[in-house]
Length: 616
Image 1 (cartoon, rainbow, N blue to C red):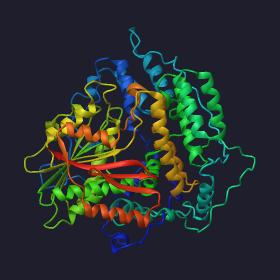
Image 2 (spheres, helix red, strand yellow):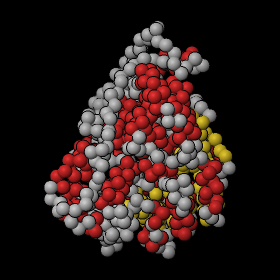
Image 3 (cartoon, rainbow, N blue to C red):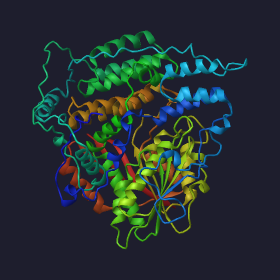
Image 4 (spheres, helix red, strand yellow):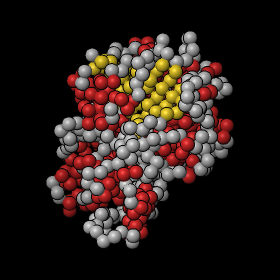
C-alpha cells in the first residue's frame, strides 16, 4: 500500500516526544502485518444489520451471533495459559464458542454463509451466493425472498467543483481559504517503515505531550497549494435551506418536489468542495437513498459492485488523521486513562471492561502509564466487548486486538490477560461472563459506542438502560463514559434531519478549517466515517438506524436512574487541557465544563462530552 500521502509533521516538545526507543509500534504492527493492506474494512454496525437480515430469513427464532459465553483468554502473565507470541495465528488462540454457528448444521447453510460473508456489504455477492447454494436445496419453502424485487438504484456521483459561499460568512471564508492556501499541503514524500512507526507511536503513545497544531498539517516539499480559480458567474445558493426544504417535502411524502430540490442540491454540491458543499453532498446521498424507500440506503451507495471498498489499512490511515486533527478523541482518551490510573494507584490487578473495544487504540497509552507506576505495574486484565464478525470466526478481529495489546504489555513488562466477548446484544451479557475476580480493581469504559444501542422508541425494555443496569451489577470502582452529544435521535424524520444537519455541518466545517481540502485521507474520513453516519441517520428507520446519539444531559438522567453518581472533574487536568487547546489547536475549538462533564466542541456547538461515575 502507498503511504506517501500521509506524512504529517509533529510538534517537537519534551524528550518524550522525540525518544521513540520506549514506544511500541502498535498501529505499525497492524499495518505491517502480512496481507493486512488487502483485508477489507468491516463496519461492525452495518454488518450486524446484514447478519440479522440473513438469519431472520433463515430462521425466525435463531440468531447465532452472540458469543458472550466464550472462554477465550490471552495472557502474558505467569499462569497455566500459554504466553502469546506475536506470531501466534488467531486460529490458535483457543476460542470456545457456545450457542454459535455450529447450530447451523446443514452444508447448505455453510455454503450460503460463506458466499454471503465473503463480501459482507455486497448485495451482488449475496445474490450470487444464494443462487449457487439454491442448486443444492431440496424442494422446500424458499428461505430468502424478495431478492429480485430489491431495486438498488445506482447513483451517479456528480463531481461538481463549483465553489459556493453563504452570504453571512462569505468574507470570513475567503480569508480562511487564503490562509489555507498559504498552508503547506499534507501530501507528499514517501514514508518508510521506521518513519511510519514513529508517526503512529507519536499519535497513540504521546497523547499527553503531543498535540498536532492545525497549522502543522504540512508537506515535506514545502510547496504551497495552488489557489483555486473562482467562477465569477457562480450563483449563491443556500444549500442548508434547500436541504431543509427537501427534508420537509420528504416528510410530507411530496416526492416530486423532493426530487426537484434534490436535483438543485446535486448541481451545487460536491465531495471535493467547501464544507457546505461537502455536507450537502452526503446529505443528498442520504435523501436519494431514502427515496428508494426500503430502508437499505446504505447498501445502495456503499455496497454496489462498482463501489471500491476500502481496506482496513486505508481505514486506519484515515482514522489517524481523524484522531490527530481535532483534540476530541485525544482528550477523551487521556481523561479516561488518568481517572483509571487514579483508582488503580495501589491495585494488584486492574480489570478493564471495554464496551466497543474495536482496535483498542485507547490502551497503549495506559499500558505505558502502568509500566511507570511507583512500585511496579499491576496485572492488567482487559475484557474486550464488540459486535461479532460475519462467518465462522466471529471473534477474529477482537482476538487480533488482544494479541497486539499483549505485545505492548510484553515490551513494557506489564502482566496481561485478555478476554473476548462478541455479542450483538450487549444488554444480555451476564456478570459471570466477565470472569471478575475478588481482588481486582474494576474499570468499565465506553468511548461513544452507547450511541449505537437501541432506545425506548424501538424496544420498551431499552437496551441502553439494560447495559447500564449490567454495569451497576458489576459494581465497578470507576465507570468512564464519553458520548457524542447529539440531538438527532428523534423518531420524527424532519426534526431528526434538522438536528443532524446542524451537527454534521459543524464537523465538516472544522475539517475544512484544519485539514487541507486536497488531502485524500480527509476525503476518506468524510465518506467512509462521517458520510456513513449521515447516510444511516437520513436514509434508515427502525432497527436499520443504528446512529442514535443523545445529549449528555439525557445520559446524566439515565445514569442517575441506573444507580450511579458522578465523580468531580480533576481541576488540574482540566487546566492542562485548556492550556493544550489554546497552544496547539484552532481558536474555534471549545472546551468547557458543566455539572462534572468535560465538554468539547466547535464554534459553540458541543460535540463530545466525558465524565466518570461510581455506584451510588
